[in-house]
Image 1 (cartoon, one colour):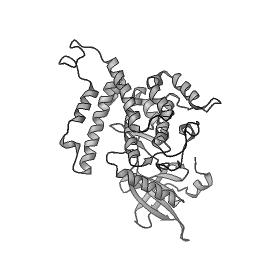
Image 2 (cartoon, rainbow, N blue to C red):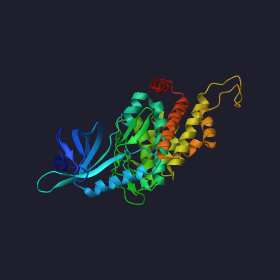
Image 3 (cartoon, rainbow, N blue to C red):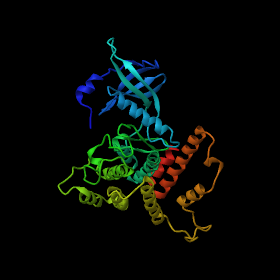
Image 4 (cartoon, rainbow, N blue to C red):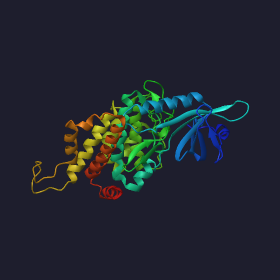
Length: 349
């Protein structure tokens, strides 16, 4: 769903143009266009000494809705899937009193999800999705559904690697009709469910993104369509076979929560670790001669209460969350046994 070209041309702002907010009087210098969609155009701007992303639209209701989404996400401690909100204002474009609504958000840099996996290796695929599902679980618990999940909207930043969403335009309150969607990731397009905003809608999209990692150019719906075509697509790619059960359950709407899908994916990763881990003379009983599974060690640490479990401030929480993310990626990388991914990760440390 794209913005029509006539609407886009109305907001063709040349680099060097200074956008001044009518109410807050903040100044933003346009550097370049980042993209455009159904409800507006996004520009890279310079704001003081930092870069930011500015989205403008003639649909003030759409701008307000997206701003409310970002404000809601900001209240979810530890969730960093969407960009942080910096400003919201109007730009008076002429002497006739006409104005354009805009908001300014954090500029998220990094490769998109598919490019990241191409650079780092397919062994990073479950690592990325474990974190994505963890953040989706928190967002769903707060009453939202992303709606338009797709690789183009998912940027991997870091170090440590972290999935961030650069477009919240399709985010919808649970129970309402999905506002924006892209056909390949839409269960309605495949005849596998409604376009009602439910957690299962996002989880279907997650499964389609997993399939997309093995089919970078995607594929069109055939006459057989539906689950039969998608099941065949999964079974034709060796790299998807270990995750077939998780993918098919998500496609068929069997997961009620992102946590359920994440738990199943984590079980697969754990089994892979046990199969790949070399045996030692100390046996498999977890004694002194046998290395303890990193996943089991992490679970024990999570069960033990500590002063860091409940930080007294949001700043302390974020600091603790960042450290936890480092640990999670170290552990999962070790579990996967992906020597290439592990080498790259240790190198950036």
